[in-house]
Length: 101
Picture 1: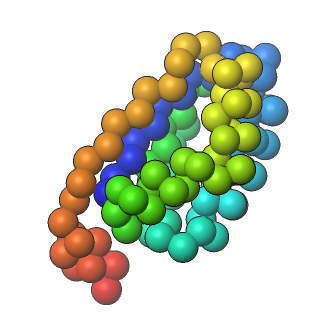
Picture 2: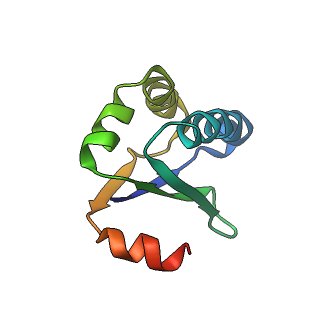
């Protein structure tokens, strides 16, 4: 499962957001079922794209219930200019296997 998250961060809160994001990625990456997390900061903007690859939707849903995920979501209320945009897409397991061997 691919999860894409778009976040527009308030300029004044950029440093705090980056610290919160770092803690989130460290925690999520160590969770069973998390295959990969990639972050892209758009040039000349305080907008971030986060791509998360999870084994399946049930693992993703369990991840959303963890304390570190809830903490990150709560902090985003203060750090983001607009609500986070999240989209998901199921991808065949063979895509992941072919590209990572």
